[in-house]
Length: 306
Image (cartoon, rainbow, N blue to C red; front, side, top):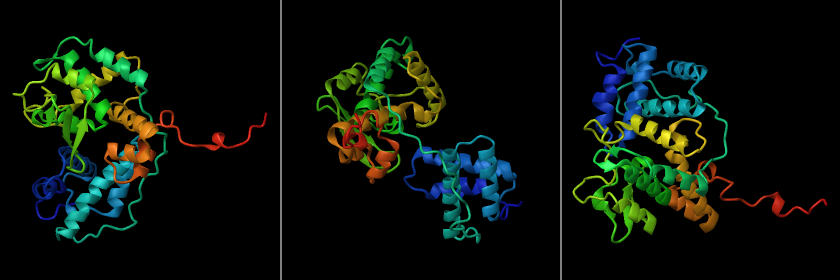
């Protein structure tokens, strides 16, 4: 395989594609770059844009699936490559068209959404509140406990909470403004007494961020997040909460807890707004734990046999 001119696929992504993506979330940028790097490494270091073909992409994804990638991981990598490919076609960088049906999606097992119960959240906060040591210049017990409470009460994605600016957190008026990483839309969340008190215990107006993370390596989130997730996984395990591994079984479970309890009390539309979704079908399929937000079923209407 050979690159177009002297530019490889990875160079094209770094020099052309990413600079043109105004407003793209940092996490998405990292994902696009990582996927193209992995694909180029698999297919050959001289891989160019004209080597983006249905055969090459499908073969790479199939190899990943055979190596143990989950269907969700395969589909995520597929989406990243197709985004770069479509951009290259649209801007005339390659004449290889994206086949409308030539790169199939992997079919994942559709599992029930799982959230943490309020009993598990309480254990998590208790464990966090007893942590020794420091997170930068903030006692770890204050930093982690307030972060858990903030995610629990807002239901926001952890990336958005970690980028929360001190100027957007009003303890007097009891709210926190977060910018959603995916949509780049700001949303205001009201906070209860317990969350306000937890944040106030380490709040400093001179800091840029409410939860500064010292392992950023002088770059903004999500850099340094590997250590962050490992540390929180240890807190989860110490709280006697089952943990199956993976980032989606950490703070995303806390996000599901918020959305599930919201659905149980206020209904699906309120849960959709809380999650920031445009379509309630996404909320129901991926966020609502049926053990918390019980949906009507046959047991509510069928006549009893005995």
